[in-house]
Amino acid sequence: MPKIKGKIVRISGPVIEADNMHGSKMYDVVRVGTENLIGEIIRLNKDVATIQVYEDTNGLKPGEPVLSTQEPLSVELGPGLIANIYDGIQRPLPTIRKETGDFIARGVESDALDRKKKWHFKPIAKKGATVIGGDILGEVQETSHIIHRIMVPPQHQGTIESIVKEGDYTIDTEIVVLNHNDKTHALTMIQRWPVRKPRPVKNKNDPSQPLITGQRVVDTFFPVAKGGTAAIPGGFGTGKTVMLHQLAKWSDAQIVIYVGCGERGNEMTDVLQEFPKLEDPATGEPLINRTVLIANTSNMPVAARDASVYTGITIAEYYRDMGYDVALMADSTSRWAEAMREISGRLEEMPGEEGYPAYLASRLAEFYERAGRVNTIGSQKREGSVSVMGAVSPPGGDFSEPVAQNTLRIVKVFWALDADLADRRHFPSINWLKSYSLYLSEVSKWWGDTIGKDWLKLRNNAMALLQKESELQEIVKLVGPDALPARERALLESAKMIRENYLQQSAFHEIDTYCPEKKQYEMLRLMLKFSQLIEDAVSKQVHIDDLIIMKTYEGLARMGKVPNEDYPKHFKQLEHDLEKEIQALIKERVK
Image (cartoon, rainbow, N blue to C red; front, top):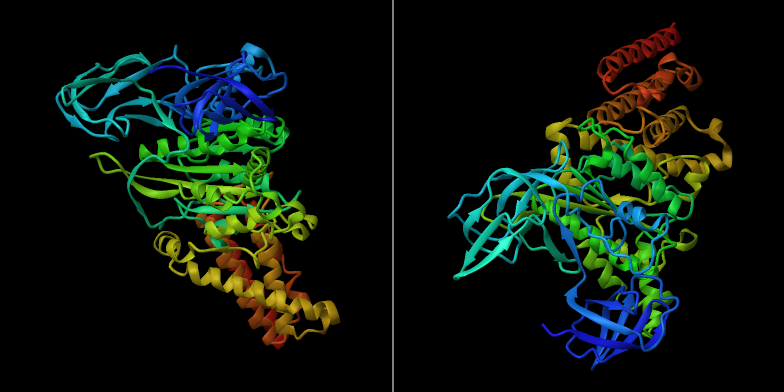
């Protein structure tokens, strides 16, 4: 293929224009200037290409060369992705640090996957077998609990002419030779895939199983399904990043892709420092052993933010194709949208609302629509999922701004973070009256069959209590709680119990940071039983003040701190003591 070589004619921040680029295609990767900076063609007008550069453009001059690779921006997919840390265009940051120090030098290149490391390849397919895209050729033990399935790339098919024996090989060793229409093609353990192109699937299925996160307000009140989409909008200081960290740490997805897209460097540092130390509750291994981190912080070039979310979702789709449940966290999509706005301004495009480009909604939709629970391609039957959770950082916590509004039109779960709750130190600061989940009916069957038949009834009863409390608060503000009838004061106490001891959960408490689904159910059942018992007690003239100084009241408030292995026995005793104590109060009142 002949080389396409142009030269720079115009520079505007991260956007440049180059002429003599006839024959180039949209989204081709180019090398810019004498330092070979990485860029991508985003507009073509005859032989003039407009390019967004993923590195700092200071010092570039008109007349410097631009060389097209004639390939789209792609990622390398293969063993070695897990536990790695990449920037937005899949350059491995630990490797680059060894070469250039703490700051990434311009034009630096490094292989995304280690070419020297040997992996133990175990062949599954046989010589002479006919295979199609997505079929499994063999397996590599990537980490102690993740089996990396080496698959036929989607665009290939044919008959296996040869396949290597079981043994240790580097990722660029030819392991299989395919013959298709008398043409041979050698395959290695590496696939390359364009980041802007979704990987193909057989079909998408309806989400039916919840993604268990260990966060009570999420799992019980506003659940997200495996293969679902969720948004976490909130102003500064409302806990978006900590919430995403919690979802990344404790969700029961087998693989986690965490994309730090334009957020502060110290927040990404927390993830990098914590994940190697934290123990995965599912495996007992460090959490990093099932995580891929993409760090594109606010001090990195703005154009690379655009690529980082696509890089993350492509890696997620790759593991989905192996049959894994993958969770992707993007922090935050607002910074991604701001990068789009800056590039759009440099392109002198007609601005939309608040200066964002007119195609903001379609870009957000393209990203979130790559989530889903799917049947993968290939002759073997496999099912995998990608769940996407994106933080939104609206300026001043204004949910009416374009990124928040367009995101809400696309996603099925809305966890609204509330500044007032955050100011009262109520975390997670998810407002239970503004949030919603459209997966509730789909996942309730799983909860009913697996955890408790009355799960949905308990959840709805708790929500009804919280809504009644909200209505009564207006009266309380006017006349005070003492002026309310005893029954309504009991209702306020029940709602307070749920609000302060169920919806609140400490991310930094050794036990309360993660609450198993069965424990969540038992906690809610006991709190609603407490509600029924005190309502019955006040109807028999027991004073509400006597009920809230019971010994078991404090026990109920501390249920979240009970060790997860001890709670069944502890809760059973607590329920017995609660009934006994309230009966004693009723008998004393009758006397």
